[in-house]
Amino acid sequence: MRPVSRLKLLLYLLPVVGLVPAVWNLATNASRSARERELSRSVIMLTGLWLVTYGLLGTAAQQESLALPALVVNSLVTSAYFVLQVWLTLRVWRGESLSLPLVQRLTRRLP
Image (cartoon, rainbow, N blue to C red; front, side, top):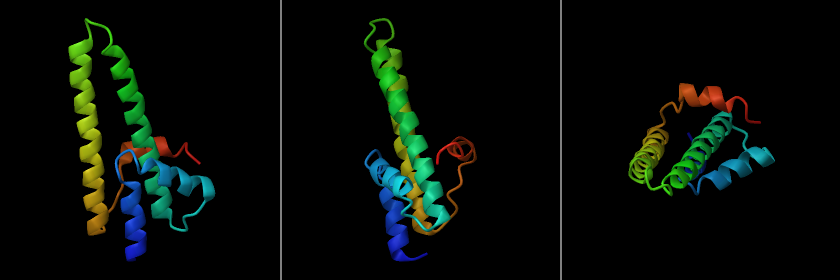
């Protein structure tokens, strides 16, 4: 894999911030590589799911009876999101496969 291509993939995997280049990549059809498109779709799906979950659990934490459980689950989901991004980054660095079967089923609906 070329260093420029690897750098692009690593840019997409920056937690939260990588959403912008991933969306840009798909919106402009800038990528020539199927691997870049696949990773962009996965990043959009994972970050989108994390943002929705984060928002819903943050809203649930506003209720006094759900505050502690919602905050605990929110921290677990956020930690899992960041660990997954780091794991994918390591796989890109090593040149390994980036397939996530469950996420790939969901990303087939993206353009």
